[in-house]
Every structure is written in structure tokens, then in C-alpha cells.
Length: 143
View 1: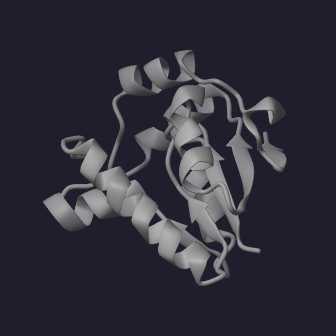
View 2: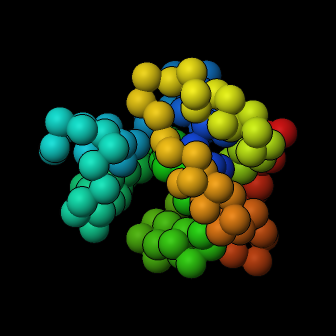
């Protein structure tokens, strides 16, 4: 059975780094889809369309028996329910990248594509760490 790894963490936490460190697992990243569609990975318009495409890509890979890393912030529990509704037939593992906010901001400052500090602060404030009662098979916490 294929496994869906759902990244959870604020911008700059190290989610994409984790994905790159596991090159044998296919990655679906909404930011890359934004880049494809709009020529700008930061474009937050048409979020529903972006995630529909992302979920469809993940579904095709999972149906082919391939493991998938879904590389997005996923900080809110209520939004993570979509993974359980859309992918009820596969194991789901939460990968919670729990990095101190000051470190996330430091990393972000060195990026080419920066996220505003106020967005990082807002996401950190709204961060709901994953819990097993959501339905995860496993929760991996990276500190």
C-alpha cells in the first residue's frame, strides 16, 4: 500500500528540505503548481484550483503504488481533514517540522523567495500540531 506523507510546519521550518532528502518519494507541492499556472510560486489566487490539481496528482501517484510527500504548510487541523476525505485508502503519516520561529525567519531571510514575517507569525499562531485522533498512522516530529 502506498503512503502519503503530509508535511506540517510554517514557512522556513524545513519541509521542502525534508522532501529533498527523500528523493525516492514523489513530491507534490502546491507552490510548484502555482509556478506552473501563474509563473509565480507566491501567487495565492485560485487556491482551490491549485489544491485540486495537487490532490489529483497525488491521487494518480498513490494509485500507481508510489509513496507521495505532500509539501505544503498544512498548519490548520481543519484543512488537514481533506487528506483523510480524499485519501482514505492509503496510510497517512504526518511529518511535523517543529522549528523555532526565529530560526524559520532566519532561514527565510536567506531565501530568494521570501515569505513576509507577518505571514510566518500568523501561521505560527494558527499552528495545530498533528495528533493521532486526526487519524494519522504515524506522526514524525522533526525538531
